[in-house]
Length: 145
Image (cartoon, rainbow, N blue to C red; front, top):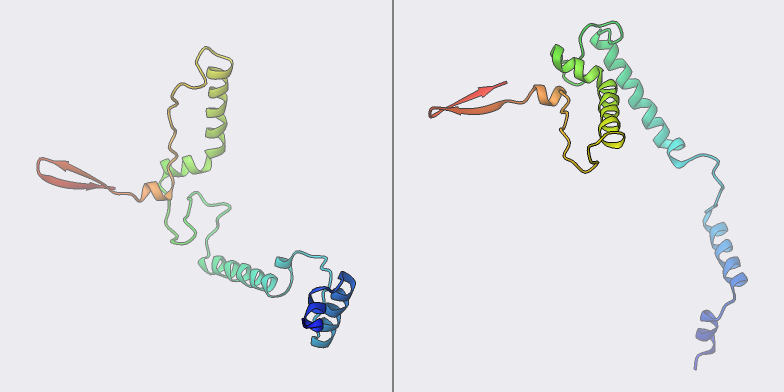
């Protein structure tokens, strides 16, 4: 039996700790306590700040007034949303509250069962306004936007 080999595996915890500390000191490794989340330090924070400033500069270059505008714009393509779709986008909170109120009135307080089927309310968005429908009419395919 090799006595030195057995001693390597039978070290007590304080000895292992001191070996690790001396290794860290020799190699310049320090374990510092951080007072901030890692995303708010170093390169991540500077990257977020740079991206935010680039986005701000992009909006300034468009020369669009998003606050007082009568149109709803898509940020990436600067496409204008049609009025019907814009109404759904801008009033989505009120539509959701109205649907919740009718659910509570009809199903919780009313006579309808909670498990009955519900009618979905599909809100119009930029994605739904850009869709094309293909309809077949007498051997011809017609595309509707």
